[in-house]
Image 1 (tube, rainbow, N blue to C red):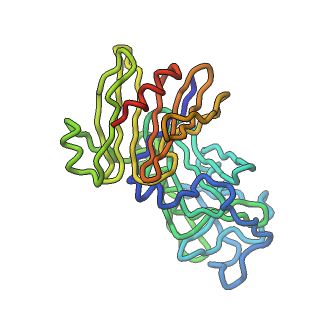
Image 2: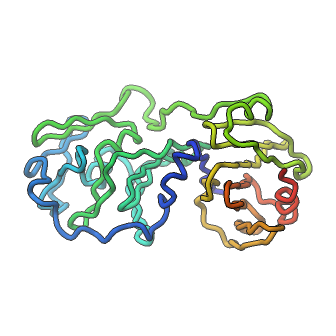
Image 3: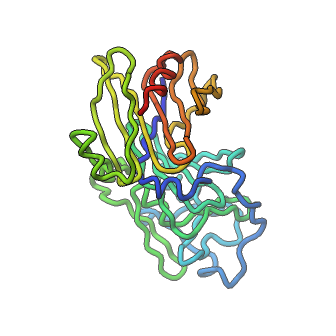
Length: 306
């Protein structure tokens, strides 16, 4: 199963402070012309990647760089493809993705929130804010040059020249060289001393599963991983707020709402249930598994969270 199970590695206060990060409704109308002259950093600029010139002739833009709240804004596709990354566009959600087979960055038009996501492991960066939203200018998506830090590049801008340079270019090309933000704890009692809330955890698990790891990224976010003898995993998360913290962005054949007591739980999966998300008005919860679970197992698990 080709899953992109993405761990929410950021405090709830960071993840949930911008609840609209994945909401297309928040995206503004496209900018139909280039920014006003006073917003322009300089005229028609030159952009290079590792000192190799980016071919901007095919973009048909009246300008290639402008400034937004102190940020140099650049055309994302031209720069990213010069770096060797693949660029994708989700027209329905007005989202651009940039990355390779291992790592990608997701950015939404009109939302100052940029997230790096691992495609091969459990991991993501904390959402980054640069005080500059991705913008559509003359039909081209512009992003802050700083966004490419999430892809392993730094940049330097002087006058009409901007150069991007690979960080640790001589080392492994994997751009996801970020420290693991998860802090492990030996027991639930240990993590309680860090959390700002009293955690509720499952008291009953599917047969064969047992607690394997307890982690937190701060006071407002808890993750517990349960495994069986085949190293199959169930991820349980609890965080302050009401947004989906599962980090599961897969498309499933099944997505339905199930009433469990006073809770309205959204279950998703294909032949079986791969994940469930819900909230109680104060906290957000999720269950996610490497393998499909029987619906009755998921219901029983949720009923026994105390």
